[in-house]
Every structure is written in C-alpha cells, then in structure tokens.
Length: 455
Image (cartoon, rainbow, N blue to C red):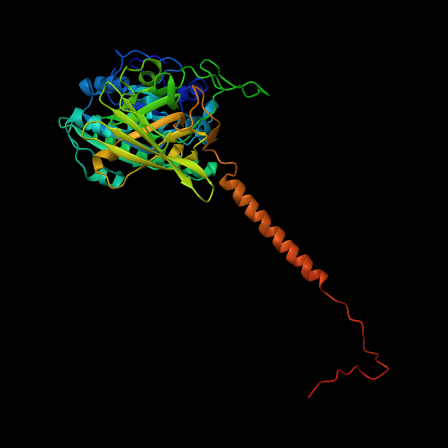
C-alpha cells in the first residue's frame, strides 16, 4: 500500500486482511483522512505484514499536523480490529450490506487518506496525550449535539474527541448494528464540519483490539489455511531459561518467557535483554532458600522487575505450595501486583500462556489498590510464562502446573444443568412408579362400598 497524495480506500483494507492476520493480536487499525491534499506524499509506504510502531505513527501525524489543518477530530472506539472490516464491510462491491458506508465514501473521496491496518494498540491509548502536546490544546470530548454549538476557527487549533462504543454481544447482528450506528455518527459529525467549511484532519482508531487471534498457524506470506490442515507442533524455545545460581553452577530459580513487555506511556520489550543478551548484573540482587525466593531483574534503563515467591505448608492438602507477587520499580514510580490465581505445589513449576495485567488475557496480575495513581500506569504482559524457585535440580523445569483448568465455566454450567435435569427425571420416574391402581370397584347393582370411619 503506497503512501501518496491519494491513498488506498477502505476497500483495500478488506483485501489485505489475509496477510495482516499474521501480525500479533495486540494491534488495532488506524484510519486517517483530511480535507487537505498531499499530506502524506513524502512518507514511505507500508508493506504486507508490517506493524506500525508508535514512532512511525508519530511520523505520519507530524506530517499531517505540520502542514495540514490544525483542527483534529479523533474518533476513538472502545474496541476495533481489522477483522471487523472483513466481517461487516461491503466486500465484493456489496455496499448495501456494509456497516461502514459513510466511512468507505469518506476514505474514497477525501483529498488525503491513509489506512494503517496494524498499529501497536498502546499507541492508540496515548494518542489524546500525544495530540494534546503537539497542538498545545486540551482535548474536548464532544458529540453531535455539542458540535453544533461549537464555533471552530481555522487559525486556532482544536482537538475534538468522539468516543464510540463497541458491542460485547455474542450475536453478530448486535455488533454490526453498533458499528453501523458508529458509522452514522462519523458521517453526521463530518457533515457538520463540512457545512461550516472548517478544514480538518480526522483519525479513527480504538483503545484495544476487539478480536484476539491466538492461532499460530498463520504465517507471514500465507494468505489462507489449507483444508484439513493439522495443527503444527509448537516451536522449540529459541533461548534457554534464565537461571539464578546461588552457588556456582547450581541454579535455584528458573524463569522462561517468549515475550516480556512493560507499558508505561510507551511499550518496552525486555525479552532480548532478559534472555538473548542479558546484562552481567541482571539477577544480581536475587536470593533464594527453601521458603522464600526473589528473582530480581535489573535492566539498564532503570526498570527492575521482581518476582517474589513464598513457599508454605498447607495442612489441608498435606503438601507445600508456592505463591507469587510481582513488583516493578523505576525510581519513585513503583507498583506491586498480586497474583492470587498463580499457585502450584512446590515440587512443580508454574506455567501460563499469559500472565498479564490486561483483562483480555486473564488479568492474573492485580494491582495493589493501596498504591498511588502513578503506580496505576504500569502495565506488564508476559507470554508463555514459566517459573520454578523450589526443588530445582538442574537447567530443566519440573512438571508444570498449568493455569488452564480442566473444567472451564462452560463445562461446569453444562454439568450442573445436566445433573439438574437428571434429578428431575429421576424424581418424576420415582413418582410414576409409586402410583398404585385401585383393587376395589363399585358394583352398580349391589350395595355401594362403604368405608368405616373410626369415631
């Protein structure tokens, strides 16, 4: 997709969804358009499979804010993914069934437009702050009614934010109706600006993706799945586990992850600094014994991540279990996260696909509510998390206690419902079998049956 005076319309996004699915699930699309032409002609184009970072997004925005209109309109949806355009867009020219008729017309008719299918979603969270600093104005949250009361001036910059919802319903039609209503809001707001003759630059993005793609069988360059394809085995780890040795060549803590990412205004990927090219003093302050263990990761940028494990004996299970607490330190910006669901017998290691502060990934890390607001800004995401701090016998993890339970909530609901119906059926059969037929009947020609009553 080339960047030029006229950029690809929204329909191109539908065609490119296939290769873009190879990207991580933590991306959101960003659509930009403006009433002024040739805003992004000098910017390099994006290629298939490329994920736009916050710095690259800043370059596109700087080009628009530097030479384009200073009235910026930010449509910020709660959730949005590129799959939404495929599921609810007017593909193959069937625009009557599209949930985005206004948006498609806008992208096709705007003098300048740009479609970024995959942008690191944390960049969308800091967009209001970024635009506020660039325009030197405070964001103003508006809707269609309040927009009519505003009097925008071409010479005075303004930042207008329009929040759009997203349906959490499991029904496809419910989600499509919400997206169609959002599209109507976008069309009405832009019609108001057009009627007033105000030049503008607009953005549409989301705070987080609406669909999390956890499948790993989509490879970059593969535009589809083969029929009857079998699930491929998970690739072997590309790096050995991180070990803290209390004595020489005798590890007492093992830690492994495929990705470690910290969010504090911007994303910081610490995976390579932890496993591939660790600093000599990375685990310098760590310690361990039979009851307590602390794995301290000291990074050159001043961030310290501390995994605190405590081993206790529980009489009910007659065995020892360990629990976990995580701390992040960066000068005065410190944060503590409880992990009440992270627990395993001390003879095992603990493994979980996602150990994160984000609700979409299980929300296993819960921030300590007694801390200040500065600590609230920390976010931590660890993928393929595995740790062992007790009964370590070498550079291999013991049997892993996985966070994925055998019985999911759906299975429990099905079992309880089935047992309830079985109980009702059993009770009904018991009542039917308890019925007794009459063994005596009235003879119309003889005396009636009399039942003696005791006085």
